[in-house]
Image 1 (cartoon, rainbow, N blue to C red):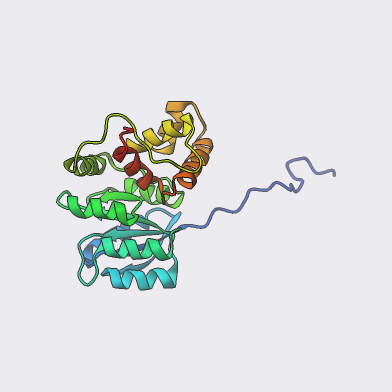
Image 2: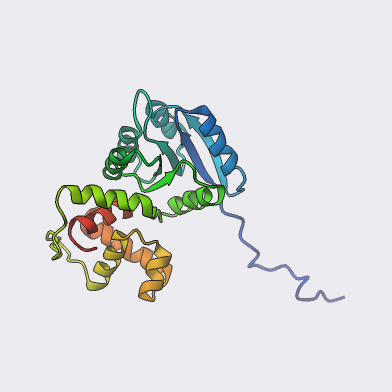
Length: 235
């Protein structure tokens, strides 16, 4: 009996699932770490590989475990989250740091932006939002939460409002008009999907543009690009 097409082995079999996103939890409150672990373990594509109670432990575990994403508290003994973020990003720039914050951490939130953190979560975040933020960080798309973005904008403007006329430093290779459009939208905290919809592009094209913008400007990640856009009056 001749096998039907459905019975015939195919060379284009489904690809194996992608490996889970590995996460390191950093917080000095054990109960909070346990709660975060419980929330994340509801999602099979995310795996918690370790926990740390301060920034010193966090750096040691990052060196040992090389997680894809670090969930970082800001207020901790021995070494706070800002210093730990700066040290981790300096040694392992490919590792994404998501800051865990509360509404009274304005100054530390702002400092953590400059230290290289790529995203921000409030400590009362729900399971689905937490998981999506981790996935977004892992793929290099960590939008600023609107409430956090407002804090950063407020802090920037306390030191003087941005010039309403955009004034960019000279780059070896100038930004194109399309790249400037995307940089402006990054300054509002827009995600790749939102930028794509706004400019009628694909998400892949937006991601490529952002990589080019970072290369031309020498900025480290999209969060620093957003900060740059605000500082130079693009938003």
